[in-house]
Image (cartoon, rainbow, N blue to C red; front, side, top):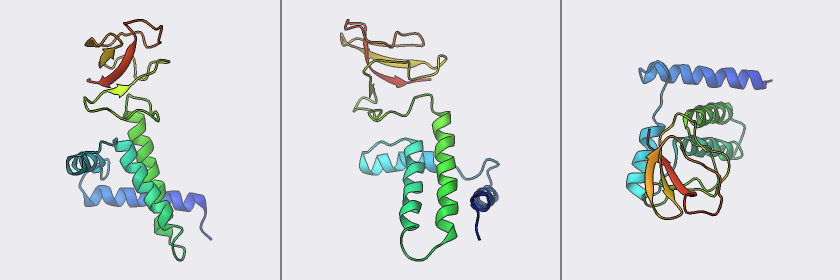
Length: 154
């Protein structure tokens, strides 16, 4: 019988193997380059988190095709963990509408600040003015100074 702990341990083992194979202490971390290449080929921008999530979904679909294969569940667990790692490293919250527009700006509809306090962002205000700062008011008051789009710049 295979337990959840055994699947997770196997996933961790695969990640350690990939660290040795790709000669990186943290393990194989190719998703950043992969999503940039995907954007260059298709023009579609996705985040690193979304790239890892895509791979986890691929493994979930494969787990439903044919006989049981531990590989689908082990790799799926590893990909989902990598998605979590990437999401934790992103200063921007994962939002349903957090896909950048043609200018690389993410639409903003007001609410709690979506970035860590030390993160520098570029913003577009309701009046059309754009600027960079670390300290903006993120709520919406129906005034020209409301942030309507942003992007992380450092």
